Image (cartoon, rainbow, N blue to C red; front, side):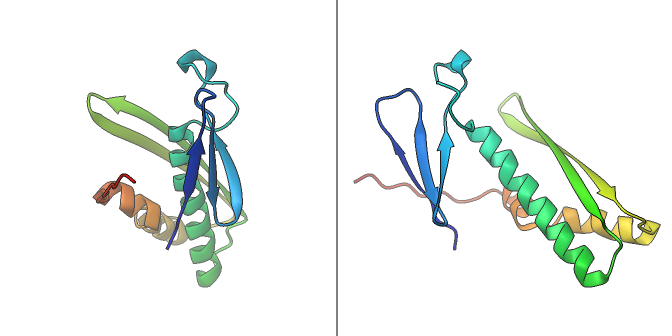
Length: 128
């Protein structure tokens, strides 16, 4: 189970996040009143999707013996009305057959973070 702990003080909007024994700094850009000292929240969301995409495709290609030398993932987030839209472009590097490319295209739609975002998540909040 994944877990994170965030802490913010009085410095606009500097947030320290601790997860998996590591520290991440989040902030907003100066244009939104922050200090641009860290990743903006949607940057972190896209980073999670990019990491999951890359790791899952690498694992799958390794298990299947595909000649995947590397891959690159480009992501963009935008709002269309109240709905978020994420576009993802994956560049596969290596001498891959059409079958391997087609299979990786199927797998990418079922990565864990992809499924979480597509299905939505229940969020319960308590205050202490």
